[in-house]
Image 1 (cartoon, rainbow over the protein chains, first blue to last red):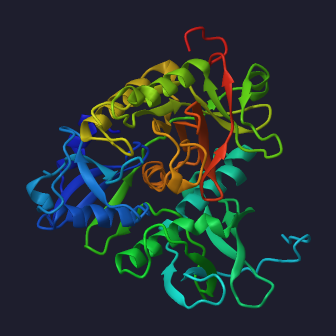
Image 2 (image 1 turned 120 degrees about the vertical axis):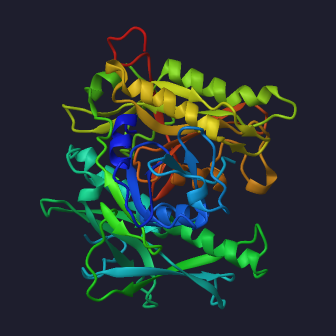
Image 3 (image 1 turned 180 degrees about the vertical axis):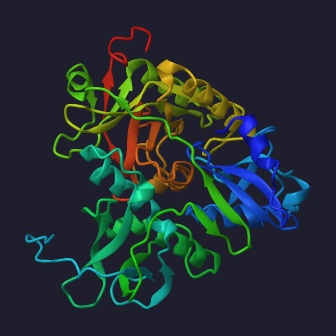
Length: 98
Length: 371
């Protein structure tokens, strides 16, 4: 849970080789800067790879949710079409209570 | 660490990997499949070891990331090289070592993953029984694993750099006077589980939110997230949680047997918790768990006389949302066979959510009439 000023400051120097954006876990206890992301990759491929890196449970699929709009990204569409440099997202499990 | 009563002892210290052997017949049946236990599969066991061996001993200065872990299998005595139980050994930054035993049921989520694959391939039918054993594999030369690195390169070529967020601080609060004023609910005095306290007001709010779905026709699942501080006791060194507030889950997709949170649900939750953490009196508040209603009569398929149980979906959801959070809770408000209200609280124990008790206190902090 970083403030907007810090986000802007960090995003002013993006990694030239790919997309840079921010990822927070659902409960807001950990956040990461993802750098050098291939913007042509489907969003689901990126979210799943991030979940593996964070040692999150692999019994559920994961998706990105934009913090500004609360909208989930389309997992099949390229991440670069839906997430701009510096965007803050939350990595959210595609799961439900039962 | 030798279990003298059972006559078993752990394997010599070394690095071990684990594989589950899945069988459809418990007595010498053919192996249906194998499933490798991954680092992520051990995440909740590591989190529980952090709580039991470090936080509850007053070592709240030790972060989970500062611990390294290794699995030590306890072999069956029948010589078939399967493990009867496991010990998770954690080593702190000062090189001190702690051990926590787990049963092989702590890996039931791994077996469940294998069973889903068997169901998908038609080898197993949904609801069929299956059995598993744990086969340790010696990993020569591997060093103990740490649960997280601050910087990693992904297979896709991108990198993750962890931002140094300060987690909500622990709140110092003496536990004995709180317990003296508390009403114990389903507390097993034989087992010294970490204490969970509810204010009476928060418990009432949680039940109200969970049972709200019973008013619909057909009834649906509704619920809330549980909020409050994690406290440390300066007298006993105990680490305990206090649920003082709930955030009702709104804008959900509610069905009779499921509850799905939307992006707007999460956005509201984040706004509320951020606001709390920015207020001096609630700066230690964090999301501790969830409660929801199983507003249906007991299901024959579960073989239980209550609908207040943790479903497989609940277990998955809690593990995903509260990953690496040792005080995670799941409170189910359901019905018994006579359709009377029933409720049960579940916490992380033996690597999964198991039923446990709690204490109800009039208010918290004790001197605050509004809490």
